[in-house]
Length: 607
Ligand code: M6R
Image 1: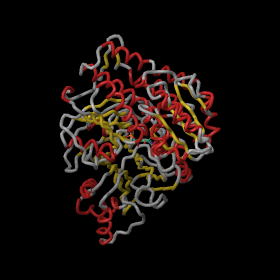
Image 2 (image 1 turned 45 degrees about the vertical axis):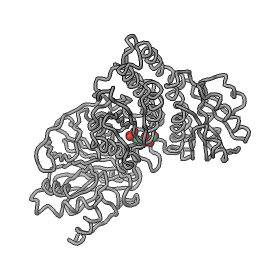
Image 3 (image 1 turned 180 degrees about the horizontal axis):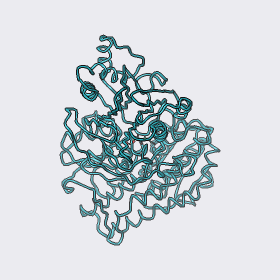
């Protein structure tokens, strides 16, 4: 979704803003723009296309100054085009915005009636017009911004500057925005920490209703009534280098290869194998003995992690778990009991649907627990408890290490709860922790032996449709494998529980339909072998991912990739890795934009 950055400091804003825009590219965008303020004059440039096009366009101009705003736009209202790109201006006001102004049509009509002329199709353009229209009544720039924000319905993170005034104003409601505190009194606003982590590691995460007023070397935060508020300064354990490609062709590939490290970081300090104990310092949970049902709610890949979490929890804790897609959960009036525990899972912690689900749950007085990767994100701040995944910044739009670390957290949480509910004893916990500890090394062996996956990708990349089949805990694994393939290669991939094949998808099978099977040696092994037989009988191609090098079907199928063995609950963490790699290689060979696939945004901050 849209990315915002703003700067007020000693150095020229131009290069800093363009660099931050490049770091925001991963969020997904179709156009970009920049506004530079110098001695009261504002100069603006906007381009449809890449940040590099914008950088090139302003290169010759040379205009620079100590303050500015910049933006990457992901179209919601109005097609991707230069005139719809941000910043938007009216009179001497310049605005960048992320979010959706729900009452923009109404405001636009009123403003038009007052003689304002609009030049874009966006909802955003009403904001500078509204501020400009309120200037004389409010008596100050800051007052006019405050009055305008009070009139907006919907969500916003905004940066606002004005010609002739050395002030940068930032405000947020339901869209993420932070203020970075740099050297020499410099202040940088941004949609997320990775955008500016190279300049500072000290952040203030703005809360809904906050208005940050930045003057040279000075920051004041107030609420919408103008009362000053104090916000904590926080640091993240991420470095600028972690948000770089580090020699890899794409962030996605880097992040796939980072998984052994990411999972080790997720486990570090939290497991004690000898004692059979799991620790979560930051955890705040209700009386577990009273919990009759657990909910796991999320979107996309994080939802797939929840589906695996359900298997892990139910198999060991024997507590019913209900999983739900956040955008469904929030509108279906779920039957919640006050003693239920609701776990919300999100890499970014900024996914609008997941946050809305969390708010719904909190409104009904239930306890909420976040599993989240981004420190200080809205979800992590607003849930009653949080477990961070410590995967490090995930920049590739296709989620990889976030998924395997989320599943690792579910597994640890299961042990933690199992001990407290007395359904697991120390021997059980020791055995389970021992298996978990082996996972990073096992993933490393998969990665070391992964060159054949590129060959499989090359042999199959010309097919336009794939079917992914798995059973039990590996049904979510194939859902995730198919999601990876479609989002980055634009190849149609559908995942089914293997047992469902004969209830419909079997009609699709012929020599043009590769079927990806995930079939480790678990209780459904023989059943999945029968499914493979049925595919082969119809000339379908079988690509098999298993932990069994002597798989019954090994000699009769088209491709075989063997992952190490593990226990049932942890097998998906291993099986998903070659699926991530196969999707990556197909997309890379097809020449798509792997890290920023078309139409997608890394963090979906609007509904
Ligand atoms: O940040 P979140 O985990 O809340 O994001 C949820 C989904 O938008 C995300 O997993 C999406 O499906 C990814 N592009 C999948 O690779």
